[in-house]
Image 1: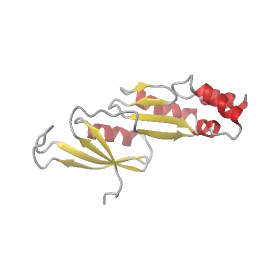
Image 2: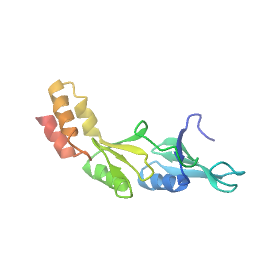
Image 3: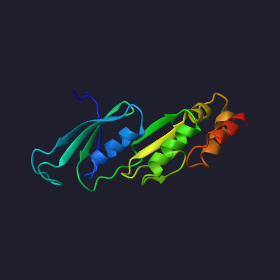
Image 4: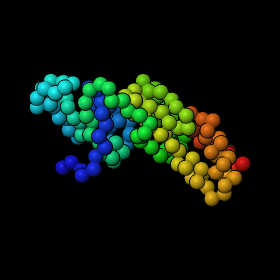
Length: 159
């Protein structure tokens, strides 16, 4: 049964490829179903893959092969909390190393243009530290990074 609330992600014919990549990359992720078009539509024909039901880290998603002209933007991103540098590196490399691109402050985009925040838990804990001097130091350190460096965040936290 489809959940009442589902994130719909628009793709240009690559919804199955993207959903399978997410299922292979992130824990608690899977492809549940592939639905083919029952008739011709503006960007495809009967029998083409129209929708893909999948889950990314427990979040229900629908990949819609809606056609060209509707790119993803940073206005929507998945924020992935990582526990250590090894997990941060693995997920960053999975996204950036497979046709994606780096951005600032722990953000990156996959090859389909979907934005991801690969965020070590220590970063959030440190940026929200009750001591404003700690939060400021960590924030300033983060602002110089692309992929988050856990050791550098911990050093900034210590002062």
